[in-house]
Amino acid sequence: MNIEQLRADTPAVAQLIHFNNAGAALMPAPVIETMTRHIQLEASLGGYEAAGRQSADLENVYGAIGRLINAQPDEIAVIENATRAWDMAFYSLPLQPGDVVLTSTTEYAGNYIPYLQMKQRRGIEIRVIPNDEHGQVSLSALTTMLEDERVALISLPVIATNGGPVQPIEQIGALARSAGVLFLLDACQGVGQMPIDVQKIGCHMLAATSRKYLRGPRGMGFLYVEKSLCQNLEPALLDLHAAALQSADTFTIRADARRFENWECNVAAKLGLGAAVEYALAQGIEPMWLRIQQLAGYLRQRLLEIPGVTPQDLGLQKSGIVTFTHQNHSAAQVQQWLTGQEKRINVSTSTFRSTLLDMQQRDLLEVSRASVHAYNTEAEIDAMIAALRRLPRV
Image 1 (cartoon, rainbow, N blue to C red):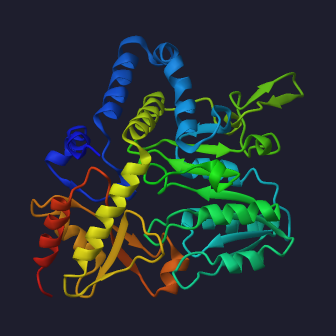
Image 2: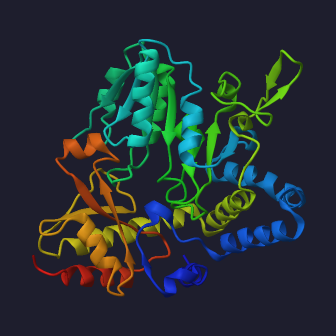
């Protein structure tokens, strides 16, 4: 990859080291310029008029996302964030009392809470797929669990917010298809970081965000729903964009995945999402994935050199999210130290509240999270290691 060009396209790297790409990555110049142009257009024309002038570009966003994940444009809904995209899919499922939802120990609390709500409302059952010896979903255990005909859904993240393994999603998808069970994939940490092909994965639904590895703006996400499934799902919320009023007593829901959208949206952010997707496709997802894995491997290796630091990542295949603990300092102290005193190294803290099941299982309250992207460098990693070595003794 042309790392110099990636960095030239990322203005902020001149003033900071950003290892919080799993939270919100640095936007490249084409994304910033696309959004700025539209905001200026709104200021000069008016919001509705500016959106009308951009109608072709707004339509192209669906095609770009389709190319990114190997889906059709009419299988894509662009929604204000990934949480709401995931919610729109999950709450549309006609789950019945006794239906079983299978998830992983790495499930995000924001998804697990809706499972509990549906357990209270409809009497569904939640079961957690055990891990194998590598710390990822046990495919043999999943195979056995799928023998229960009450299993209606497999729902899990491809990569957890607190690190962990890249789940074997293609094998999971094949098992789900074979069992006739729906598969909802949370790809928030995967899209933009690694190749995501919904045809190879076999998932029926997928939710993702703009702001993480895809390098788009905050407040924007998207949902994929397989065409053959889409018309069988009635969204929990409808408006005049998702449906059409036919008479005082009747309405019809649109046929495509945009039935999960609503009429109002952040047009500049939607265009920014499209620009981020086009930028990622132009760079090449596979080369970026290889670069991210190389940088993350280098960081894990360097962390082993620091006394008292323990890497906390599991799995046969690891991602660009690198987590660790320090025996003498809390994750919050590590984050404050790296960010402050003009070092300007952005990392984050992941607590048990985000991934309760996994953290409890591993007896962890929090971890430091340094998530690398393709525009990062080995020199930046070396600077972080040097800063960690200078942590004051307690």
